[in-house]
Length: 153
Image 1 (cartoon, rainbow, N blue to C red):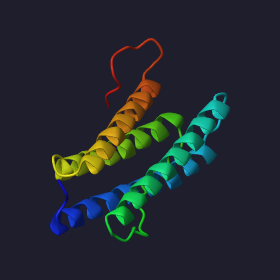
Image 2: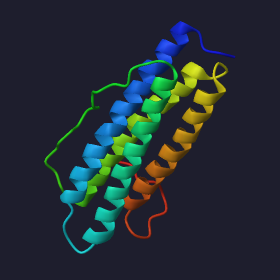
Image 3: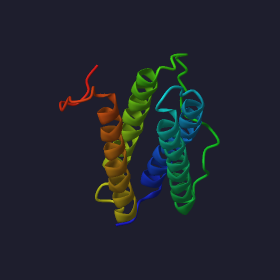
């Protein structure tokens, strides 16, 4: 089933918000990678840089779908919260909040296109899986060594 014009416009709007959020992730993770200090700096910086690269790829993919639907990719960037807290725990909690916000937008896209566009539905599902796995990774990093229960603030 093809999307009608109104449905395309809704999908384009959500995809642009995804693109903006992912571009904010590029800035956020790049900044974080520069602010990590201490014994575990090297692996954490590498992980942050990988997340920045992944966010850029996600933004690009969303932008490609915007143009596929005949839309114009946004030049905006999502919210950037600077708490001035650079402890690795604070950085990871900010990362968790950012990833949760991004995940909500992917679910919003899935709801908007479910049963209307296999392409966009599968894209949304794929990205939801990736984002949920990433959230789990951050959650595990926030746990104290030996703790099995998920991190909760």
